[in-house]
Image (cartoon, rainbow, N blue to C red; front, side):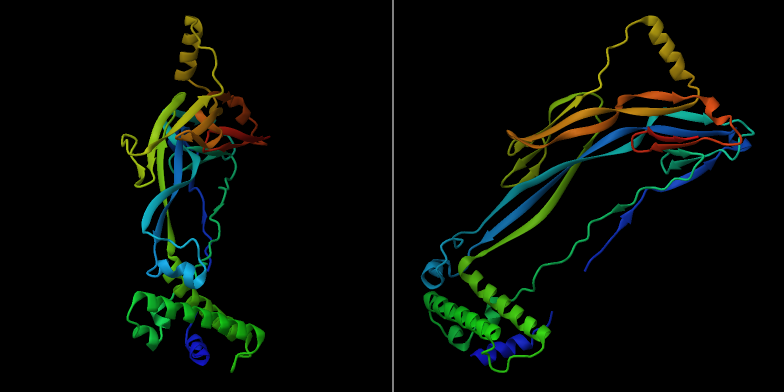
Length: 360
């Protein structure tokens, strides 16, 4: 029997990926053809809520009633079932061009090589300097799933002739103990015709483990987990209180916000940069004129917001995040471009419209 197990093992046979993503940008030069002006947009922040769930399927083995008797297993699965688990919720943000915030950078006609870098959808990256998008690396993933083997592939003639479930369970249990004995003989050097090559030995031990696992599952049962993802996006324009973004059901997974079969998952968002409302007519008129005829380079100082996501009564995500539409605009005056010998270089965060650095 041991020889046949080893021969079966000897006849059996046995990566990674890195991707980088970066924002596509375009160099726009101020020339006579465009009246020495570059048009760009300020962004508004889009929030995306990512939910990771697991679909768990438990399946009882045909010999679960004999798991305790023959193998001493107390936690064998006794019935088939399927359910979902909410594993994790995260939040990401990105800048989307705000069509209501379109601006023009005006360069003088004799300025030295004036240019700007814009994203493909018109968000401002740099002025008078090259732009290097940040590289985003996707974590390396390895396939660690071990080869599977059907239990019937290691059954003996005796098993195939068994006349009852109880007898089949008994024979399967004996085969498990033979496999364990064979593995122990391999490890202690007592096995006949054991390979001397380390890799061959490793392969045989792996196959013994696979065969044993397939047989044990006939008693203990199997649990398989399938990961699923879900995402939804929103553009916050103000505070959000207990807005249901979706619902979660143990039996159905993620369901729509209006499906009462699930527990509500809702979001709270609070602007941390609120300013007193301006009511003075003169001040409002002044602000309107400045907005209608902006001079210089308009950029955004994004506002900070606290964010909280709750599932039922449990907080599953909390933190702070920058929201462009919760901030305010500031201006770099046009005279900063007047030094022809040393043109100023300006860098921005295109995702939020914020000023990153001014190099004189």
